Image 1 (cartoon, rainbow, N blue to C red):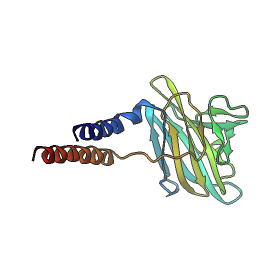
Image 2: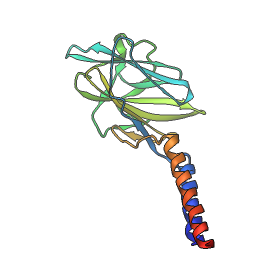
Image 3: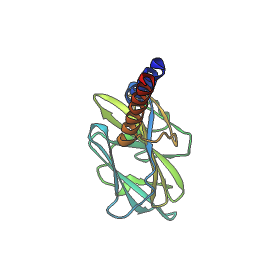
Length: 187
């Protein structure tokens, strides 16, 4: 019984520590309708990505502006978009990364009237992290980024961002099981 209680406690501690120790894709699905005021994603290193509604020439779509260390994929000077399952990394053969301080003009995501992905990059602690944003028309569907620096990410890769409250509940539950097992053994 003592081994089982210690194992449960060790597992809960490992669950709390592990996310920072290994690579993981963190993602969210805001399903936010874009307006003129936009929707801003803030990632590490002071990187910001503001998505606004825009007319793509193919229907309602999206545009993006960056702040801080934020950059997006670009092809011949304008934002480049991709399909699901595309690899986003520094070795992009057909694209580079660029900052867009204003969404007007080249910040327009060209075909975002359909379901499209753009690559994101930001610098944190001197290292580059890669991510993606999924837009469909004038909606920001989802976004995600790789927690391990200099590691490629596939567009559409998801792993829910664990909420601190959820992690705390796991730890409290494991602690409660440990106390309960000790009481039963002593009785």
